[in-house]
Amino acid sequence: MKNILIVGGAGYIGSHTVKQLSNSGYNCIVIDNLIYGHKEAVFTPYFELADLLDKDSLDRVFKKYQIDSVIHFAAFAYVGESVQHPRKYYENNVVGTLNLLDVMLKNNVEKIVFSSTCATYGEPQYIPIDESHPQEPINPYGRSKLMIEEVLKDYHQAYGLKYISLRYFNAAGCSKDKDIGESHSPETHLIPLVLQAIINQDKPIKVFGTDYDTPDGTCVRDYIHVEDLAIAHQLALEKLDKYSGCLNLGTGIGTSVKEIITAAESVTGKMCPIEYAGRRNGDPAKLFATNNKAKNILGWSPKYNDIKEIVSTAWDWELNRKY
Ligand code: UDP
Image 1 (cartoon, rainbow, N blue to C red):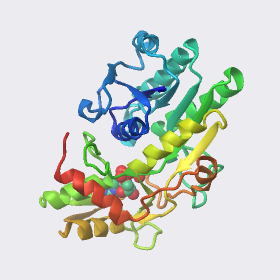
Image 2 (cartoon, rainbow, N blue to C red):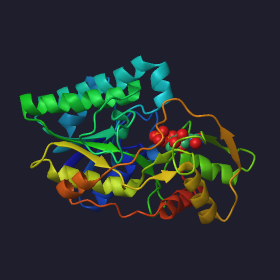
Image 3 (tube, rainbow, N blue to C red):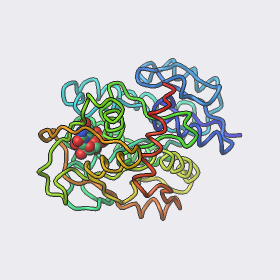
C-alpha cells in the first residue's frame, strides 16, 4: 500500500481527498498545523501536527514514514486578508512550500500534486478560461499560488520533480455521507453564507453587486463539488509518472449569485433574506472554466453538474454539522 502525504489534510478539500484516497486503498498520512484545519475531519489514524515553516518537524515525518508522493493543500486563502497582510501569505504559502520541496528532495520524494486556483488568472480576458489564459493575479493570494506554479515548473526542469498543479474554481458541497464538510472561520463563501441566512433569518445574505455585465447583474462563478475535486486529486496522483503540468478543475458551467440563492430556496423550501450591497473589491463579473484538458489528461469528468444537487449536499451538512 502506498503512503501518500497529505499536507493540509485537515482542511476542506484536503479532508475530502484523504477520504477518497483511503477508500481507494491508499495509506494517507496527514500533516496539518490545525490553524484552520479540523482534527475531526481527518479520516486516517496517521496524523502529524507539523508546520511548513518548521523544516525539522517536516523532516521527522518524512523519516517516520516511507512517503511515495505528496498532495499539498496547506495555504492561507483569504483574498482580502492577503491584501492587508501580504507578508503572512508569502511566508506561509511560498516559503512554506519551498521548505516542503526542500524536505521532499532531501528524502528523494519526487512527486507532488499542488492546490492552485483560478485566482492565478486574475481579471479574465476571455471566457471560458482555459489553461493558456494569461496569468495576471490581482491579489497576493493569487500571486503566492502562481509563484509556486512557476517554482514547480523550474524544479521539474532542474531536478526532475514530477508535479501537477490543479487550478480549482469555486469548491462547494460536502461529502455524501455527511461526515465532513465546509467549515471556515470566518466563513466568507457564498453557499454556506446563503444557507446560514436561511437558517438564521435575522442575518441576510449580502449580495455583492447587482450591476455586473451578466444576465441578472450578479457575479457568475463555476461551482465544483468537493468530491469531484477529491477524485481529480486521486487521478492526478496516478498520472504523475506520465504527465507534469497545470489543469483547471471546474464544471464549465457558470452560475450567478442570484441563481445560487434560488437553488438554495428550492432545496430548503425556505426564503433567503437578502440585502443588496455594493461590489466587493477584486471580483470579476464572470469566471468559469473549460475543463477539457483535465478530461483529456486525467479522464476526469465532474459527477455533480446540477447546482441544486451541489447545494443540497451543503444543506445536509449545515443541518448536521460535526465541526
Ligand atoms: N458573494 C456575495 N456575498 C457573500 C459572499 C460572496 O455576493 O457574502 C459573491 C461574490 O461576490 C462572488 C461569489 O459570491 O461573486 C462567490 O464568492 P466566494 O467568496 O464564495 O468565492 P470566490 O469567487 O471569491 O472565490
